[in-house]
Length: 136
Image 1 (cartoon, helix red, strand yellow):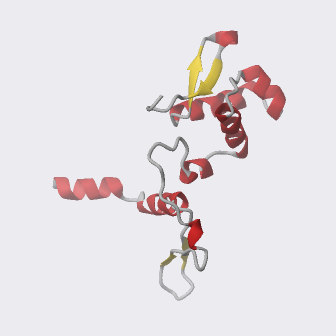
Image 2: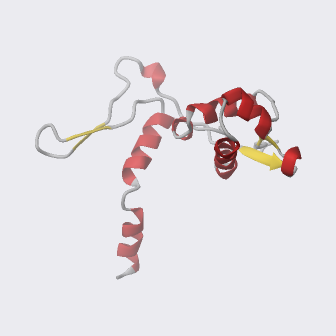
């Protein structure tokens, strides 16, 4: 297989996710997929008369709307707390959100993996903070 085709195959399946992310990042609703006419359709809902909905994503923005949409409600709340300057610990979050240690650990791991939070300390001293922006 030539390199051109291999590159295209690696991109296969990512188009819908990329379209959805770009629509959300620009303040629009996500694309609608359907087969109402017997053909595959993708509808890109525009802003209609509400042009003030359209926004240009800031490159320094920590969390894009598309990224935020991929987080669970609990993870979004954790990000809000981090953004407000709170330092979060596992035990406190377990009690606050009424979940088990493995659940909150998975949430923290996701926030670290996405580059939203940074971990400090180990064991019982483990804390999570908002990852500093590159400009800081």
